[in-house]
Length: 207
Image (cartoon, rainbow, N blue to C red; front, side, top):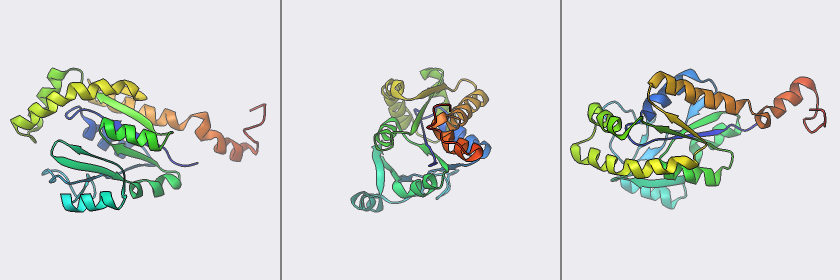
């Protein structure tokens, strides 16, 4: 059975990176699809682990070569997800976690109908702004821009498959993990396992 794509989206500052890091440590058979970006790495980020950091010229060359299943400009920088990041993994039955904005999530859903889309929300816009200021990675102008875009981004959460409100971080991690594990237990994903374990065809009327 091919692996599943799990897309996590959120407005900046909602805790997406922290939750993804926790899931990578806690959930077996789950790999992270490392996106490409033209922006400079932050002090805590490592190339090939958080992102593949490339210059804009290289990024645009990759676009022309058809490297990306989806890409977008987010603020001043380019972000993209390459086919090679996850196709080999899903083909071998491994689930893959993608960190994308809402537009990227929609593009993935259009290409891969069985993908699962999860949207993380802050408990309020006021708390979102507080978190952005506390992490001290953006200047005031960038924070203002992120807040202006947050309301529009949040409007798009209603067509996602799941919504998790990150009011309590540990609870939000638990809920997101539960979504992944419950999706793995769906009949459609367990059919081949049932056939192998019990030597039956799942198309039988009695199953």
